[in-house]
Image (cartoon, rainbow, N blue to C red; front, side):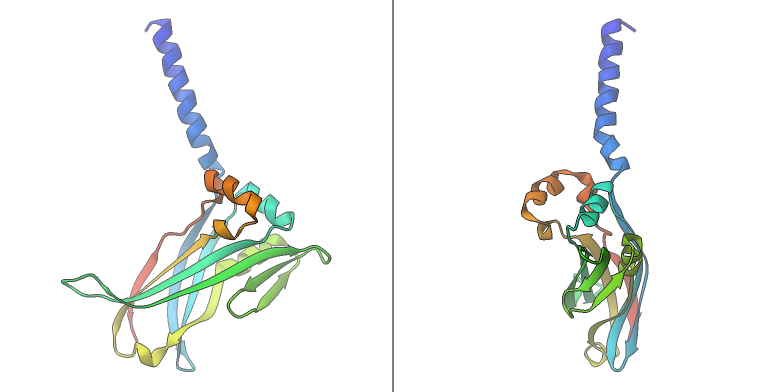
Length: 187
């Protein structure tokens, strides 16, 4: 192989490595399991996920930047010949932020205002990854129906402070989404 061709091949390999290298440090969310149950006539959802923030996101949270994770839920009635009929959609935002004076991490449900305080960032992330008894709808609305429940967790880049948004949009470490986790059930 001529020297020119070897250099060109080496250059192509270095470019590919440079493009793939950031993905090695990319963050990720994966919903590992989810289920529904009825409590006090309310449909509740539980979900267990694995959340791995990038080094940049960890540094940002340790510096006091609030990070918001969006919880999206869809309930549809499956149909054989047509698209599934959407019955309900729900959206919740959960924020982790460092309290500067106490040096503790606060996990907040922005819909209810509920706040849980943790001494370490890792504990707040574990708490966020384990969603329990999240009320979705009145069970009577869906009683007797076959339904498909879909949920997704993702980092809300637009909720970051203004100067950080452009950086987050071009950096793969900030693009976190679980994709849709689906299961069918009958209430």
